[in-house]
Length: 413
Image (cartoon, rainbow, N blue to C red; front, side):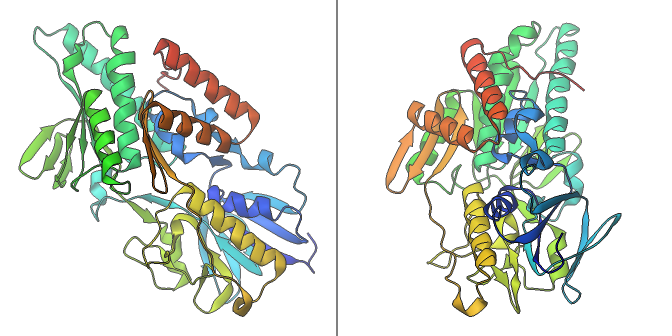
């Protein structure tokens, strides 16, 4: 790399970091992309890996392959330990410090258990491929164990899954588990009865998908219930243990709890020594920089970005991608702080799927649910997948499952 050129370091190969790096493809500068894994992950489809509908390779793509033809970038796989703002260096485990002139922090987030980290042992979350494969294994083993018990018992053997959190991840998980668990898998387990498989979705608020309009929330809940999901609203989790989960006024006995109730930004952000919000995100300025540093940008789930009304925007993939492109344009043009236009998010719509031919979508004042929303959801997700191979495989798996109700990734590692 040319020591005279501007050095740009990007921490994180998610949607924001990837968009920034690709937007700088033709810029006359040197980029270093650092990520703890070697791949870009399409997180919106993680739940389909967790429920055995897709394989891990269908939703991930190696970062080195993505940037193989981009001459101004190098990829470093490593764990970032800290950011030295005074020395303008990023500290990486088992790697020399990486110096920068401009830094883009796009480190994402992890699931949070309301300051009760001990709950994670009994209620794992879903943020990485490792999480998804572990959940898939737990689900498949749960069916095997339930089948063994049912085969040696004269009574009904219940198999209960509890999903905590009624946001998009929780709703999508609940719908997928209802379809795959109660419809696709039961024919392979002759001793299990359909009514013995219970999926419960627990939400502390008054409705699921609270980020959507009330009519779409109601449609989503109705779709879930038609699939056999029990939706428990206005129920806060009080405790999670090996025998089950305690809610307001009731205890649900189960060894299968999945956490989808909240996120917390990476602890790496604390090394920036800037104000953080309750979720650990950085309060960024209108140009997505931190206070007192015009070349240190924070984007994606790591940033608390406000809209025109002062509300913090939800951490969605389209938002992170728009932030990445905005930051890339500022860096490529070497625009100084006082001359930068403020970042403005263009909301092109929000979608959430519930199950086979069931979804909800909002495009401004237009609300869509059912088959047409599901087709839109499929089209959008296929479009954003990286690489033709991934698109082809995912479409093939979806068509196969739609026709046969036989998911193709039900292997226990």
